[in-house]
Image 1 (cartoon, helix red, strand yellow):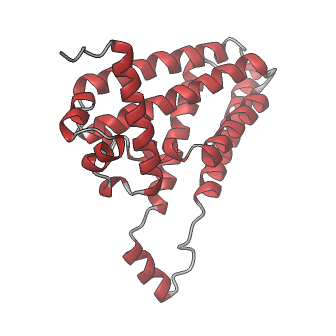
Image 2 (cartoon, rainbow, N blue to C red; image 1 turned 180 degrees about the vertical axis):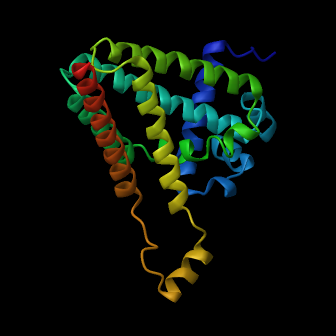
Length: 226
Protein backbone atom coordinates (compact mmCIF):
# COMPACT_ATOMS: atom_id res chain seq x y z
CA UNK A 1 0.00 0.00 0.00
CA UNK A 2 1.37 3.41 -1.02
CA UNK A 3 2.18 5.65 1.94
CA UNK A 4 0.35 8.99 2.05
CA UNK A 5 2.53 12.05 1.46
CA UNK A 6 3.47 14.15 4.46
CA UNK A 7 2.51 17.82 4.65
CA UNK A 8 6.15 18.77 4.00
CA UNK A 9 6.28 16.53 0.93
CA UNK A 10 3.07 18.04 -0.43
CA UNK A 11 4.42 21.56 0.09
CA UNK A 12 7.63 20.60 -1.69
CA UNK A 13 5.66 19.18 -4.63
CA UNK A 14 3.57 22.37 -4.81
CA UNK A 15 6.77 24.43 -4.95
CA UNK A 16 8.10 22.23 -7.75
CA UNK A 17 4.91 22.78 -9.74
CA UNK A 18 5.16 26.55 -9.22
CA UNK A 19 8.81 26.50 -10.32
CA UNK A 20 7.81 24.76 -13.56
CA UNK A 21 4.84 27.09 -14.11
CA UNK A 22 7.11 30.10 -13.57
CA UNK A 23 9.59 28.97 -16.25
CA UNK A 24 6.79 28.31 -18.73
CA UNK A 25 5.12 31.65 -17.94
CA UNK A 26 8.30 33.52 -18.90
CA UNK A 27 8.20 32.13 -22.44
CA UNK A 28 4.45 31.62 -23.04
CA UNK A 29 1.55 34.06 -22.93
CA UNK A 30 -0.71 33.40 -19.94
CA UNK A 31 -3.79 32.91 -22.12
CA UNK A 32 -2.00 30.26 -24.19
CA UNK A 33 -0.56 28.39 -21.21
CA UNK A 34 -2.66 25.32 -20.36
CA UNK A 35 -2.81 23.40 -17.10
CA UNK A 36 -2.35 20.20 -19.09
CA UNK A 37 0.98 21.58 -20.40
CA UNK A 38 2.11 22.34 -16.86
CA UNK A 39 1.04 18.89 -15.64
CA UNK A 40 2.96 17.24 -18.48
CA UNK A 41 6.09 19.27 -17.75
CA UNK A 42 5.78 18.37 -14.05
CA UNK A 43 5.37 14.68 -14.85
CA UNK A 44 1.99 14.38 -13.13
CA UNK A 45 -1.59 13.81 -14.27
CA UNK A 46 -4.03 16.63 -14.90
CA UNK A 47 -6.17 15.37 -12.02
CA UNK A 48 -3.27 15.47 -9.57
CA UNK A 49 -2.37 19.01 -10.63
CA UNK A 50 -5.90 20.16 -9.81
CA UNK A 51 -5.58 18.56 -6.38
CA UNK A 52 -2.76 20.98 -5.63
CA UNK A 53 -4.27 23.99 -7.40
CA UNK A 54 -8.02 24.06 -8.04
CA UNK A 55 -7.73 26.46 -10.99
CA UNK A 56 -5.09 27.91 -13.26
CA UNK A 57 -5.68 31.30 -11.66
CA UNK A 58 -5.10 29.82 -8.21
CA UNK A 59 -1.74 28.40 -9.29
CA UNK A 60 -0.50 31.72 -10.64
CA UNK A 61 -1.93 33.66 -7.70
CA UNK A 62 0.16 31.43 -5.41
CA UNK A 63 3.15 32.13 -7.62
CA UNK A 64 2.50 35.87 -7.33
CA UNK A 65 2.29 35.61 -3.54
CA UNK A 66 5.71 33.96 -3.52
CA UNK A 67 7.06 36.97 -5.42
CA UNK A 68 5.33 39.35 -3.00
CA UNK A 69 7.12 37.66 -0.12
CA UNK A 70 10.50 38.07 -1.83
CA UNK A 71 9.77 41.73 -2.45
CA UNK A 72 8.66 42.50 1.10
CA UNK A 73 11.60 40.53 2.53
CA UNK A 74 13.92 42.78 0.51
CA UNK A 75 12.17 45.99 1.61
CA UNK A 76 12.30 44.98 5.28
CA UNK A 77 16.01 44.18 4.96
CA UNK A 78 16.71 47.57 3.39
CA UNK A 79 14.95 49.43 6.20
CA UNK A 80 17.37 47.82 8.67
CA UNK A 81 20.42 48.20 6.43
CA UNK A 82 20.06 51.71 4.96
CA UNK A 83 20.26 54.89 7.04
CA UNK A 84 17.09 56.85 6.33
CA UNK A 85 17.07 60.44 7.54
CA UNK A 86 14.61 62.23 5.25
CA UNK A 87 12.14 61.76 2.38
CA UNK A 88 14.91 61.83 -0.24
CA UNK A 89 16.38 58.68 1.30
CA UNK A 90 13.01 56.92 1.14
CA UNK A 91 12.61 58.15 -2.43
CA UNK A 92 15.96 56.62 -3.37
CA UNK A 93 15.15 53.36 -1.58
CA UNK A 94 11.85 52.94 -3.43
CA UNK A 95 13.29 53.82 -6.85
CA UNK A 96 16.24 51.45 -6.38
CA UNK A 97 13.87 48.63 -5.44
CA UNK A 98 11.64 49.47 -8.41
CA UNK A 99 14.59 49.28 -10.80
CA UNK A 100 15.45 45.87 -9.36
CA UNK A 101 11.87 44.69 -9.96
CA UNK A 102 11.88 45.90 -13.55
CA UNK A 103 15.27 44.41 -14.38
CA UNK A 104 15.33 41.21 -12.33
CA UNK A 105 11.74 40.11 -11.62
CA UNK A 106 9.67 39.89 -14.82
CA UNK A 107 7.44 37.25 -13.19
CA UNK A 108 6.24 39.70 -10.55
CA UNK A 109 5.66 42.45 -13.14
CA UNK A 110 3.62 40.22 -15.45
CA UNK A 111 1.57 38.59 -12.70
CA UNK A 112 0.83 41.82 -10.82
CA UNK A 113 -0.40 43.33 -14.08
CA UNK A 114 -3.04 40.64 -14.53
CA UNK A 115 -3.88 40.07 -10.87
CA UNK A 116 -7.15 41.98 -10.60
CA UNK A 117 -8.40 41.53 -14.16
CA UNK A 118 -7.62 37.80 -14.52
CA UNK A 119 -6.14 35.97 -11.53
CA UNK A 120 -8.63 37.07 -8.88
CA UNK A 121 -11.63 36.38 -11.12
CA UNK A 122 -11.48 32.59 -10.97
CA UNK A 123 -9.12 31.82 -8.10
CA UNK A 124 -10.03 29.54 -5.22
CA UNK A 125 -11.78 31.84 -2.73
CA UNK A 126 -9.95 30.46 0.30
CA UNK A 127 -6.55 30.92 -1.36
CA UNK A 128 -7.52 34.44 -2.46
CA UNK A 129 -8.65 35.35 1.05
CA UNK A 130 -5.45 34.00 2.62
CA UNK A 131 -3.28 35.86 0.11
CA UNK A 132 -5.05 39.17 0.71
CA UNK A 133 -4.80 38.70 4.47
CA UNK A 134 -1.12 37.80 4.31
CA UNK A 135 -0.41 40.73 2.00
CA UNK A 136 -2.23 43.10 4.34
CA UNK A 137 -0.27 41.75 7.33
CA UNK A 138 3.11 41.93 5.58
CA UNK A 139 2.61 45.41 4.12
CA UNK A 140 1.38 46.62 7.50
CA UNK A 141 4.52 45.24 9.15
CA UNK A 142 6.85 46.78 6.56
CA UNK A 143 5.11 50.17 6.55
CA UNK A 144 5.07 50.22 10.36
CA UNK A 145 8.82 49.58 10.47
CA UNK A 146 9.42 52.37 7.97
CA UNK A 147 7.10 54.78 9.79
CA UNK A 148 9.23 54.33 12.89
CA UNK A 149 11.89 56.38 11.12
CA UNK A 150 9.49 59.31 11.67
CA UNK A 151 9.72 60.57 8.11
CA UNK A 152 6.31 59.46 6.82
CA UNK A 153 3.22 58.09 8.51
CA UNK A 154 2.21 54.48 7.96
CA UNK A 155 -0.76 55.62 5.86
CA UNK A 156 1.47 57.76 3.63
CA UNK A 157 3.84 54.84 3.09
CA UNK A 158 0.99 52.50 2.12
CA UNK A 159 -0.41 55.15 -0.25
CA UNK A 160 2.93 55.30 -2.03
CA UNK A 161 3.33 51.52 -2.13
CA UNK A 162 -0.05 50.88 -3.72
CA UNK A 163 0.25 53.85 -6.09
CA UNK A 164 3.46 52.29 -7.36
CA UNK A 165 1.54 49.09 -8.07
CA UNK A 166 -0.99 51.11 -10.04
CA UNK A 167 1.76 52.75 -12.09
CA UNK A 168 3.31 49.36 -12.92
CA UNK A 169 -0.04 47.88 -13.94
CA UNK A 170 -1.13 50.89 -15.98
CA UNK A 171 2.13 51.11 -17.92
CA UNK A 172 2.20 47.36 -18.53
CA UNK A 173 -1.32 47.32 -19.96
CA UNK A 174 -0.47 50.29 -22.18
CA UNK A 175 2.40 48.31 -23.64
CA UNK A 176 0.50 45.05 -24.22
CA UNK A 177 -1.18 45.78 -27.52
CA UNK A 178 -2.02 42.83 -29.82
CA UNK A 179 0.51 42.30 -32.62
CA UNK A 180 -2.07 42.81 -35.39
CA UNK A 181 -3.09 46.18 -33.94
CA UNK A 182 0.57 47.12 -33.40
CA UNK A 183 1.40 46.30 -37.03
CA UNK A 184 -1.47 48.40 -38.36
CA UNK A 185 -0.44 51.40 -36.26
CA UNK A 186 3.18 51.08 -37.32
CA UNK A 187 2.12 50.75 -40.96
CA UNK A 188 0.24 54.05 -40.94
CA UNK A 189 3.15 55.68 -39.15
CA UNK A 190 1.39 56.89 -36.02
CA UNK A 191 3.91 58.98 -34.10
CA UNK A 192 4.39 58.53 -30.36
CA UNK A 193 2.85 55.06 -30.34
CA UNK A 194 5.92 53.08 -29.33
CA UNK A 195 6.54 53.18 -25.60
CA UNK A 196 9.33 51.92 -23.37
CA UNK A 197 7.76 50.12 -20.41
CA UNK A 198 10.76 50.45 -18.09
CA UNK A 199 11.17 54.18 -18.74
CA UNK A 200 7.44 54.82 -18.43
CA UNK A 201 7.26 53.12 -15.00
CA UNK A 202 10.39 54.78 -13.61
CA UNK A 203 9.44 58.22 -14.89
CA UNK A 204 5.89 57.84 -13.62
CA UNK A 205 7.14 56.91 -10.15
CA UNK A 206 9.77 59.67 -10.14
CA UNK A 207 7.18 62.31 -11.01
CA UNK A 208 4.79 60.97 -8.38
CA UNK A 209 7.43 60.96 -5.64
CA UNK A 210 8.62 64.44 -6.64
CA UNK A 211 5.05 65.69 -6.29
CA UNK A 212 4.70 63.92 -2.96
CA UNK A 213 7.90 65.56 -1.75
CA UNK A 214 6.58 68.99 -2.70
CA UNK A 215 3.33 68.23 -0.90
CA UNK A 216 5.22 67.35 2.30
CA UNK A 217 7.29 70.54 2.07
CA UNK A 218 4.12 72.59 1.59
CA UNK A 219 2.47 71.03 4.67
CA UNK A 220 5.58 71.66 6.77
CA UNK A 221 5.70 75.32 5.69
CA UNK A 222 2.03 75.76 6.53
CA UNK A 223 2.63 74.38 10.03
CA UNK A 224 5.51 76.80 10.55
CA UNK A 225 3.36 79.72 9.45
CA UNK A 226 0.65 78.72 11.90
